[in-house]
Image (cartoon, rainbow, N blue to C red):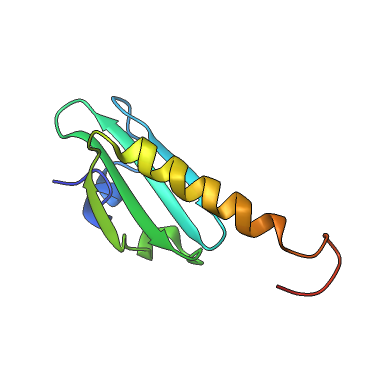
Length: 93
C-alpha cells in the first residue's frame, strides 16, 4: 500500500518509521517517502485542501534512477523562464 494514500494517511498521520517530506512548488505539492517496507516513493498533490485528510494524491510512483537529473533539467528550464519575468511587484504573470 502506498504511504501516500488517504487510508494510510488517516491510519498513520504521523508515522514513526518514516517521514513524508513535502515540497511545495506553486500550486503543486510533491511528497517523498523512504518507507522501510514499501520503498522510496513520491506523490503529487494539487492545491492546498482546506482539510488535508480529504486531499488525495493525483499521482504516486516509485523513485527511479535518473529522476533527479530529469527534475534538475526541469528546474534549469524554469530558471530560464523566470529570468524573463518582470521584476517582483511588476506586471502580474
